[in-house]
Amino acid sequence: MADAFEPSPGTPDGEFDFEIRPDTDQSFENALAKARAGDRLTVDDGIELITTGTDHDGIDRERKERVLEAADRRRAAVVGDEVTFVANLNNNVTTACNTGCLFCNFKDRSEKFRADAPDDHGGFTKTPEESRAIVADAVERGIYEVTSVSGLHPALVLDDEHREILEASDRGDLNYRPAPQYEKDPGTYTAQIRAMNVDGVHVHSMTPEEGYHALRGTDWSYEDVYGRLKDAGLDSVPGTAAEILADEVREVICPGKIDTGEWLTAMEAAAAVGLDTTATIMYGHVENEAHRVVHLDRIRELQDRTGAITEFVPLSFVHHETPLHERGMVDGGASAAEDELMIAVSRLYLDNVDHIQSSWVKYGDTRGLKMLNCGADDFMGTILSEEITKRAGGDYGEYRSVAEYVDMIAAIGRVPVERSTDYTERRRVDPADAPHGPELGPHADGTPLL
Image (cartoon, rainbow, N blue to C red; front, side, top):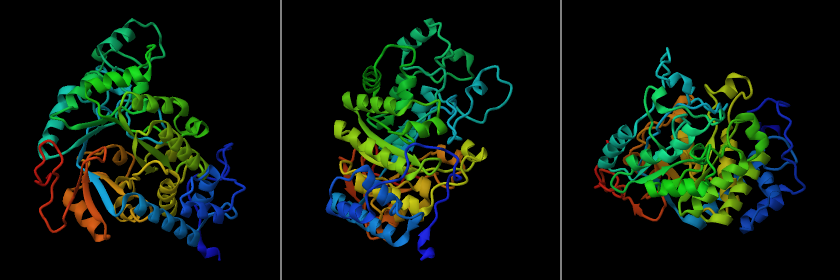
């Protein structure tokens, strides 16, 4: 039976001595029975499912298919046969960042952005006026949502009051420099949010990491920060910067980032001021299967407390051109089987989150569609610009037309549905009713985006 198992690539054996390990006293069969019955799973149950049993190494293909089937049945029971997508734009403000995450090749050292820097950095910073022009053009073409996730530029502050506090501080650990020292002024977070808030478009921005950057050097709470951002026009918060919510992993891949507790605190604060959130996991690097399930458990507990998470987004690590790969800390990303099980166990474990997203930017079209039969029900958005995955060496992430969505979703026998960011507005799209374009945006009239 050796050929019935699929080995996992990823981290070289013995590289990291983690305390959290994929060992349980549960059995695969018991865990699967609970999943099929719709019972709330424990961490041990999740580990058994995501490993297809800890009683052997590698992934058992027959057991894997049983997990995928259970997840697909759960998906059908929870959300039916609709596959949703949103007409959106990515408008990331800056690539300047000093955090030093080893999984990332999106950022550029902020020193290179200074006005007196001798060399070209190859990155970008946008002023609020530039952001507004980009968003206004996309809104006219029909988008409903603008997503903005950026590097932590030292000159970026929450607002003018925050700048005054940082200017008066004599602390040297706040990652702050005045905007005139840089070739371009990114403005403030509130100015950027106001600029992107064009004609009622949904502004999805300010991750917990950016929230931390926006309160550095003050005695403010995350509620203070997210309240001001909401007043400026912020509509929802992307739950990125989560990576793996286990500090022993974060200390390896992103030691300069906020820890698990800080991330959860920020997310609860965003929910407390009335903002919807999403949640993510970035997997397939140095972590093991138990870390993935512990992460799911923390997301489920967060949702129990807030009820604010509209969707969960598994993001498969793209290892090319990242420091983790260049330093020999990983020799690949997750396998196709691991991707399928991540989606499936997310569906089965997160019994309080209705929507699981398949990221075609990470998986590509063929595998992305496969994930829609493994428990996922959302297929991302049109993404008129996507820099993060491309900079890490990913092959996907340019742009997706509404027509492509309709054709692909219909081809697998599912129902294509244009949705709003919060899933409250939905429009079923008839594949025969071409040409296809968005209709939910402030200026959308069905005209194709391009």
